[in-house]
Image (cartoon, rainbow, N blue to C red):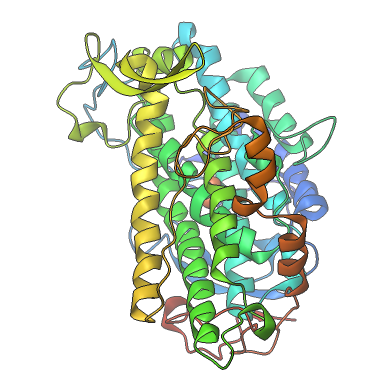
Length: 470
Ligand SMILES: [Fe+2]
Ligand SMILES: [Fe+2]
C-alpha cells in the first residue's frame, strides 16, 4: 500500500497526530522540505549505508531506546512529549503557583516564539556544521555516534517545529520554513547564534562541540523545561534524555584523545605529535576555544530579556525546584561587571542576572567533566592538568566581548592579547596539524592513531561490531 499521507506509523508520536487533521496536513507539507534539507545539508555520503541507530518509538523507558540498522533518510523522526502532569502549576516568576498554560498567552507570544525559534535553529545548524566529518571518522564506532547525534538533532528540529505549527499559526509555519532556509556559516543567511556558524572541521572540534556546546543545549533545555507554557516544558524534558548521549560522545571522545596522548608520552621519545597523536597543550587550546564559544551562547551577563522571560514564567532556572525562592523580586546575584573600564564585583538584581546564573551552573558542570579528564591523566601517571579558562577569556558576547583577558582572568592590553593569543587558542598550524591526522578508519574494531578505543561498545556490543555497513 502506498500513501502520500504521513500516518502515525510513519511519524512515531504520542501527540495524537492522526486526531488533528489540520496539524497533520501542516506537518505533511513540511516533511518533504525537511527531507530535502537533510539530503542537501545533512551528512555527506553514507546516506545509503546501514547505520546501527537508536530510534525513539515512545517516551517510556523501554520505548525510547530501540536499536537497529537503519538508513539515515529512513530514520523515523518522531514527535514525543513527556506525559502531561495533571494539576501542574507555574514554578517561578510572576505567575508562581497558578495553573500552567496549555495555549500560548497573547502577551508573551513573541517572546515564546523567539525562544523556540532560537532553540530550533541550533538543531539543524549543528548537523550542517558536522556534515563533512563522516569522511574522516576515526572508527566505525565514532562514525555511528556522529550519525546518532545528527539524526537526534534532526528530531529536535521536529520537536520545535511541532510547537511552531501547533501553537503559532501562520507565522509558526513561516518560521518552520526559515529553520530549513538558514545555513550554518552562510554570509547572507547565517544561523542565529555565533557558535553555530563556526565550522566543526575535524573530530577534535566535534568532541569539544558535543562536550561544551551540546551542554549549553542541556542547560537551555533544562531552563525551558521549567516553563509555564506546558507543551514547551514537556517537549524539552524528552529532548534532554537524548542530549545526554551527545555529551557522552563529547566527554568520552576527549577523554580517549587524552588517554592516547598519555600512552604516546610514555613511549620512546615521548613526542606525541611525532607519533601521530594530539598533544595535551593542543587539547587545552581547543578546550579554551569551544568552552568560550559556548559561554557566549548564554547571552549577556546583565539582561532584561532574561528578566522578562523569567517574570513571564517562560524560562526558569536549571532545576528550579532546588531553589527556595521563585519570584526573585528583592534578591541579588554577586558577579563581576565592568565599570568605567575596571572589573568590579557587585550585586545585580537577580532577574537581570539569570543568564549569568545559568552560565555559572553550566560552568560547574563543565568543570566536573574536565576533572574526569584530569583523573585519566593522573591514572596514566602524567603530570598535566587541563583547566577551564576564566569566563572573561575570549568572549564575543556580553560585558567582556572584545577585551583581552588571559585564561586566568588577568586583564591584558590589546598588544599583549594579540601577541599571546596563539599560546591559548588554536593557531593555523595547530589546525593544520590536527587536520593532517584526520584519515578514515573503516575496518571494524580498528582505531585512528590519535584516539584510544572506547571502554565498551554501544548497547554493550563487542569492539569489532560493524556499526556502519555499506
Ligand atoms: Fe539538540
Ligand atoms: Fe545535542
